[in-house]
Length: 496
Image 1 (cartoon, rainbow, N blue to C red):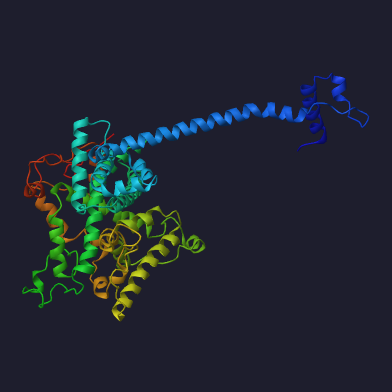
Image 2 (spheres, rainbow, N blue to C red):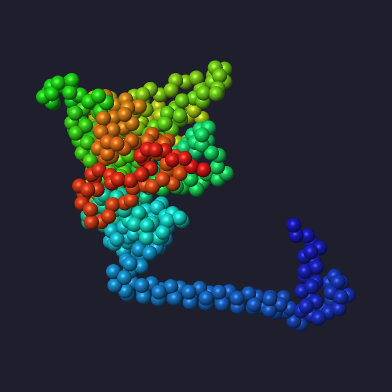
């Protein structure tokens, strides 16, 4: 707060500096009897006081001007280079720098769009390296694993040709983000389960073990993500009319020819398509993917039921008396929602009732969409395209191809697709296709461990299958696994 005293003190000080008066003259109040001063000290003092500031301001403006000129010269020098060299330089930038560079100018945005293919490959390779790097292993081993991971992910989701935009990169990074969230919550669930086992030791710091397990489950999570997307696409788009197993209109065999284990779907044609999807995965990724899904299934089962320690009165007070979701609801949530919906539910910081509401909201949305589609409201062509040719360089068809697999196609779900879903506990974990494919990959004398036996072997540092070499054919990669004491085979190794 400025007072009158402080204002007067400042004014007297200014008069003293300007007129050179004594302390007595400066402290005396001016009166009408005083003769007028011949000088104009206020303007002179103002000019003296402002001159240093103006010099500093001018110097800062000169520095800004020089920096702008330097930046302009650097930009001109950069664009004067050949495009191949410019792209090679941009490939060394980080993911954050590339996306920040897109916002600088239209010319750089257009340049990145036109050279999206090599830049996308560089960003995905860096992402694979960050999630494969291990301080214990040697550099050439890490580079070999990172190269295999990047090639495997790009095999699951091929890059469109020609690639004239960053949309493919954005969608892949979105998938990677959802997988990272799912791995994080799944590893926390594994830590809790391990601490509940009396035979397992207690760790002072479990973070190194979680990172080790997340690195091992990285490609397994991508495999399950891709399989659930393909399963949903087969149920909805491949052939919406499903023929149940045992119908004579589809197969010549009798119902007695059905396998002892349940199938992935009640439709024979869907099962044949799903077998071809399973055969497309390398043999070294089938068993870890099976165990990763089993961990996700157990975690979803734990999230969808009330805590067991609460009594009847506490359940009523906290609102935990609501019924758990049915097997059909959980199967619908996993198949049509996939890893994105599972990661949302797992990251939900809420109570049991909020998780039940999230599952019920999604299942109601799917069932209502199936009812409305059966009535006759089908999807209009191109209604999923959020952008048009007027405001983007990407055509609606290419955007649909990249964006639609990430979101459930509610407008295309039919009642037949919903009715053909399998039982939740038997989906993948006890299906004939997955079990048969797993035992085709190992020898008869080998025994596949359980899910938490696999986790214990990974944490104990048991060997994982080496990535296939470049010279091997596709048949050899998808064929039986080579001999070795791998982490998904018995015996279960103890760890300290």
